[in-house]
Amino acid sequence: MAGTSPKRPPTAQAFALAELRRMIIAGEVQPGEPLRQDALAERLGVSRVPLREAFKILEGEGQIVYQPHRGFKVARLSLADLLETYRIR
Image (tube, rainbow, N blue to C red; front, side, top):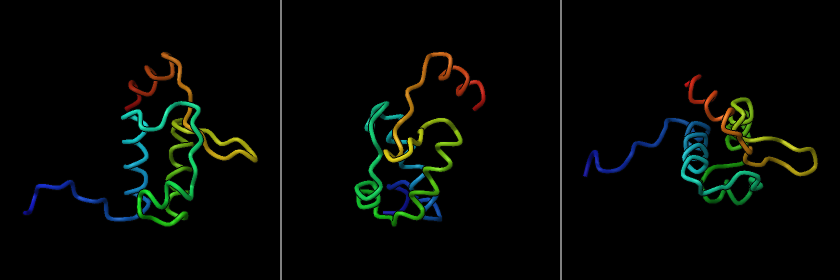
């Protein structure tokens, strides 16, 4: 049936970005939780390349942080950070 399922974004990167944002907002991944590229790529059905590009965008937005030799983690945001993000959007 047409129109019953959400439309998938046009690129794998856009899809990965949208899904990662949704997972963070929904609390499926918690602040401080490591984001494992292999597991997420498999879960989302994308390769690691578009996933890494999505990570870079989320890092630029302050939603995730990169720690050398540890990888990416969901950022821990203070109330002031959340209010600033809300104001910007």
